[in-house]
Length: 230
Image (cartoon, rainbow, N blue to C red):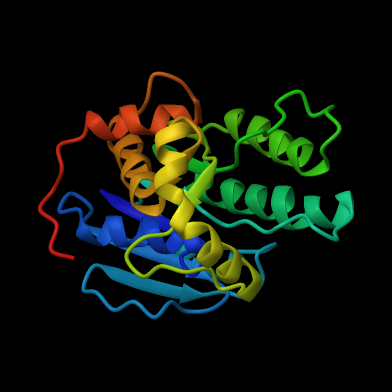
């Protein structure tokens, strides 16, 4: 399986990249971002691309892939709906429209979030925008598209957010994760579990196209664990 990964420098993307590189069925990974990752691996190739509204200059390098794992995302804090739509909906659709032209048999997996509003009419701005993005992706002529809605995500294996405030918050919350996992197993996951679930769906599909946090553990249990060296 050949994978394109967006958002590999973010906390979620780092976790997904790690699992892709560990999976023997993932032949190679093309990571596209505004800056390079620190990862080095024979299966990994990177393209640093600054303008995420226009991919025309790199389109020739984006064909022949089986899956896109889209992990880009920003906080809506302090942003207007117009601004948040531009960096969420507009960027995602620019990627999707480019990829579907060159990879009609691709599976597109989008990391959204728990609480996303499929009606696009709710009170929470970010949830409406995410819902609009999900709905648009589900209408795209990919082989398949899946929306992942994780809840709280615990970073593992030394993975950390690139945002200082987020790193501090996770450092504070980390000791509470075992408690949350016990009390609220349907609402918490890890970067490893999320990465494994995305790879499983890219390979095998899923029984539904919108996957809530509670669905992820079931997906992982159906996957035969590959040899894991790190």
